[in-house]
Image (cartoon, rainbow, N blue to C red; front, side, top):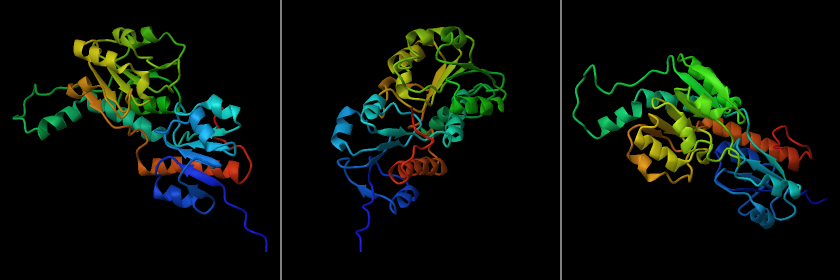
Length: 298
């Protein structure tokens, strides 16, 4: 009787939801190290560079990124080795857009500021002038990066009465920034978008405007943002991602006009499982079926 064929070896750089692990286990041998792996399922906290690919070895065929953005992967190094890279588009669009709008509303209506106020047991009583915020209704929303998530963010914001406009990477960004009440960032992290929002861009914004970032932390110069918030150059910021994640610019922690969440854009169970299943499908396509999956990058 012939020996059963060996299952492809897959390395996970981080734990995955149990539903995703259960989907992997029948078809793949899950290994603790990238050495000798045929496929790697990559959390965005892992950096897949030339050294990592060299460590994995020449048999590596696919890197399945558990995210949409692929800034954690050296695409050129992977391509030069014939390693296919995939990502997880579409399934996290709604969840990330929901968080972006939630951050806007929380910042404008001072919801998390009010929560902190109550939790520190500050004395208060109802007053018609107490902790007044602003509505999203009637605000001019500038979506920087009109991809799937950016456009869904605009659609959801419009349900609150906001008016949306869009800026691509080649647009006259300073002029558009100056016309917006809310600037929401949805660009991928590339050399061109690193510090896209710097001191000059912040100076171009209205002093009453707020900035929202659910894209990638280094799109914003965090030190310049802190300076702008302290100086009153802009009115506030809501951040789900950070320049040196998980570190946060220390001064931001002291400001009441800043709302922060720990990279929760896609953080619903249904979304994270759906992302994982796209990774599983990509690994199956490449390692078991010998075909290029639809979510291949490049």
